[in-house]
Amino acid sequence: MKIDAAICSSARLARDRRFDGRFFTAVKTTGIFCRPICPARPPLERNVTYYATAAEAANAGFRPCLRCRPDSAPGSPAWGLVSTTVQRALKLMRSEREPQSVERLAERLGVSSRYLRRLFAEHLGVSPLAVWQTERALFAFRLLRDTHLPIAEIAYESGFNSLRRFNGVFKQIYQRTPSEVRREGSGDQLKPGIATQVRLYLDYRPPLDWPQLLSFLGARALKGVEQVDGEVYSRSIALDGCRGSIRVTNDAERNRLMVEISGQEGGAGLYLLNQRLRRLFDLDADIEEIQTVLNADPLLERQLTLQPGLRLPGAWDPFEYALRAILGQQISVAAATTIAGRLVARYGESFMDVAGEERFLFPTAQQLVGADFAGLGLTRTRAKTLREFVAATLDGRVNFTEQSLEAWCEQVTALPGIGDWTAQYIAMRGLSMPDAFPSSDLGILQALGSEGEKAKPKQALARAEQWRPWRAYGAMLLWQSLKSGDKK
Picture (cartoon, one colour):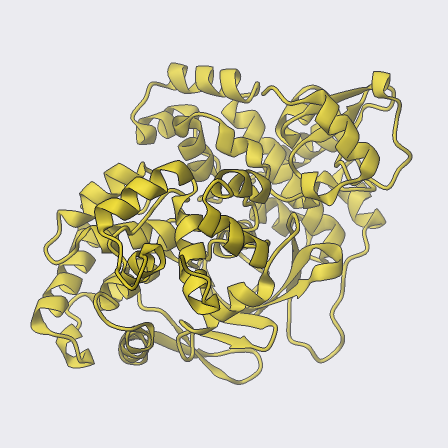
């Protein structure tokens, strides 16, 4: 992928955190590649090469730096600049613990394996397998340095079912064995008495408006499932057959979130948990690019000035969020949260966490077969829509795999009782599609109106054309503008 060497040079010499994860510097004289914030003495310009992703640098024969640790870098926004098919492939690869063959991946995407290989070579310069191996090896390095999990378990958590295969790939990329890295690691331990097996760190590029994220999520938190307490977000989780809970805090000085995971035996599902949390808190957003596009609109520019660390709150689970969005059609956020809480209390699985507190898991589609939605306080029409949605999820008419915004909306609006607003809102938050835009939303129409008159949906769509492909962020800013009173 082509990047601007002059910009990269300035950023690495300044150690500018805004460029962390946007590119990597490979040093020809040492054979190492670094983040732009590496604390080591900057090499001479003639001795460096710039790569847009860690996978490219590793595939070129460079090994990751042990000081700045590319394994901890925020996700590369460069992925968002590649073709839609490659983006979908990358998201599918990251949504499952184990690797998929190129043939199987291509089949799911509806293209030939030869074409998919050609796209990866054209846009990323590496094969799908090279991307998968590099990302998983970097994640394994993080677990080796930051936890005390056994090496065999780390291999499994990183997607390798063979310890021999894991050792081979890891040594190829790091030029040292997992055991050697483990002996050098800090193995972050929690204080005695805190019942937590694993602690993860999720780096991000600043700025991050953590209070705004917590405010948004806190207003929609389900009792027993989620909680926002001060500057802390927590929720119950179920992954890879293990139940537990997470506690997330912001280490603003080091530009990272700290995640404490409790109740899991061995911490199964850590890679998937890492991916879900990055999407939930939108940690890989390309804030500078988003601002460049949205600043063209005066209203959004003013709001971005007030809220420079904007993120698009995602969802822990797409099905959970989709069901909640349908519940919330044409009622207030508070009312929708209350009804969703009744659903959890009646059909969700409860368990006691390691601290002895009762927690609930949001019910799955299988658990909601035959559910009495009308008994939750919903109309018969809405209850019928929910039953149909659950059935469609189970029989495959609705699926949450990566697809285009248009395909998703067409798929879900084919069900009775679900319109474009609901489809777009689920896409926006449940599927984290950055260009989703619920143009008929009352708050959006109020924010875009003038002289006391609301805008029309067609007017909202027309104005939002200049915001592509970041219309979802524009919607968030419009809602925030109503709260701040800055509306014109």
